[in-house]
Length: 176
Image (cartoon, rainbow, N blue to C red; front, side):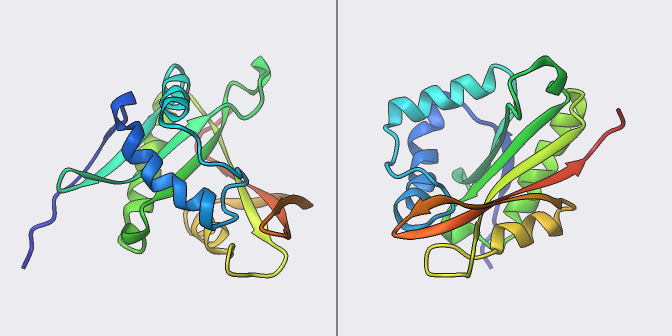
């Protein structure tokens, strides 16, 4: 039996190439990301650096190989929203269904609580009807993690010749 070692740690800018390898199929092959073009490694490194100035950016490794990442970001750019953030997660295709998403989100939530954040929001692409580019797996994952659907925008994303909705889900992790 193979011994699997898992570890969650803070991302670094040097992780950009591997994180982009994980992210690129979401851009090229799915409507999970509404980006049309895969960003360059330089742009992705800049995104990581920008995020880490204020929010946690975590990776999960299996035997030294990054299998996924999660981070928080600005919910709205006004001071009154400083107790809120948007959360994002991406897993390598071969890492799904192994508990990595739960582990990453739980670690991210602990770090966000330490930093005094209260409201977590997830912006999720949502199919009008499931297709080969988008299912409701992300919504189901977030429900499983304690998020509640709080909003829906209709036909706001267009990719691969299809219209997609967007939903917002919320989780309260602290007291205001």
